[in-house]
Length: 244
Image (cartoon, rainbow, N blue to C red):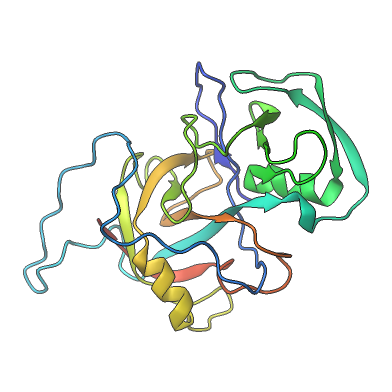
C-alpha cells in the first residue's frame, strides 16, 4: 500500500493518500482534459528538454518503457456498506490531529480513505463534503480534496512521485502505456485516455513508498465498486513518459 508524503506545511500538513493498483467500477472515469488545457498553477517548470535528433521529440523522462504508473482516486461513501465506525479529527482545514467527533462511517470506506487520501460523503449532516486523511494530520472534514500544498486535486491532471524521480511542478505525458499488472496489453480506450491527459506533479510520496521510475496519477471520483473491474483502475508497467 503506498501513500504520499505530507510536507511540513504551516497550513495544515495536508496531503491526499496515494493510490494502489486497484480495480474499480466498469464505467468510464471523468473525461481526460484535452492536450491544450491549461496546466494548474505550480512551481516554475524545468527547462525544456532538447529534442532527440532522430525523432525531433523531447527525450523521454527516465527510462523509455521503464515506468510503473499507478492510479489514485476519491472514494464515494455510498458504495460502501460495512459496519460503521466513529472517527475523530479536525472539523476544518488548517488543523492537525484534532479530537472533534466527525461522525460514523463504514469501516471499508474509512480503509479506502486512508489509502487514497479522500472520500466524498453522501449521507448525514456533512453530505457533499469530503473526509480527508493524512499520515501527519489524521482525519479532517473539508470542502474539497487536497494536494500536499493544500490545493484541490485535479482529475486527469494531478500526479505524485518521489522528489528525486520527478520534481514538484514537473509536467509530463504518458506516450506509451506498456502493459497492465498481469502482462496484458492496455486496451485502446484506456490507453487513449491516459495518453490524452497532461499530468503535473503536485504531490510527493512518503520516503520509501514511491521508488524509482514510479508515478501515481489521479483519475477523480470513484464511480462504482472498485471490485467490479474497471480497466481505468490499473497499473501501467513498462510505460514511457515525455515532458509536456
